[in-house]
Image 1: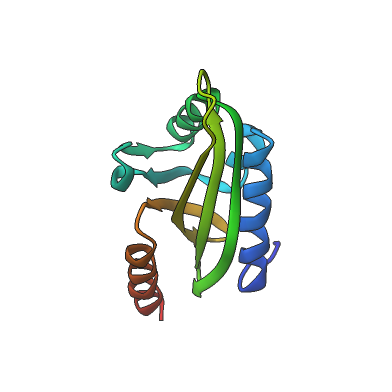
Image 2 (image 1 turned 90 degrees about the horizontal axis):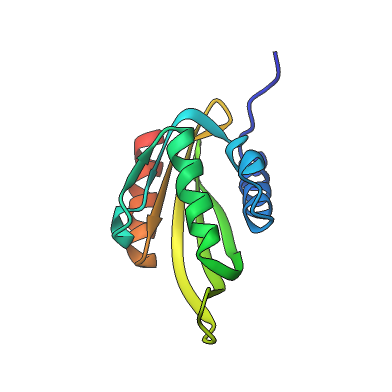
Length: 140
């Protein structure tokens, strides 16, 4: 039986997940998720997506809305035994727009047995840091 990733490995898994997303490779992105994973984008007004199929549909719709798109992880920090906080910059340009988009946000990834079981998007980085601290305390 393979060992599950922990510590630095979770940071590497998260980095590779971002690389796959920037290639717009849904299969590669979802290979990092549990089949019943949840993506909570409610803080951004985008809803909650339950299960790999729902996350795939969201990602594909999201990527289609951009002509240029890149999620740049400015910091990837392990915050609990099985949690990673990413401070992120989204760079892109929506279809039909000549204006570039630059948005700072944060993602909190919760892992179980080496795969992501919950991905929460935060528009407010301080709020994400507070949620990460709470999660780290719960995981002790």
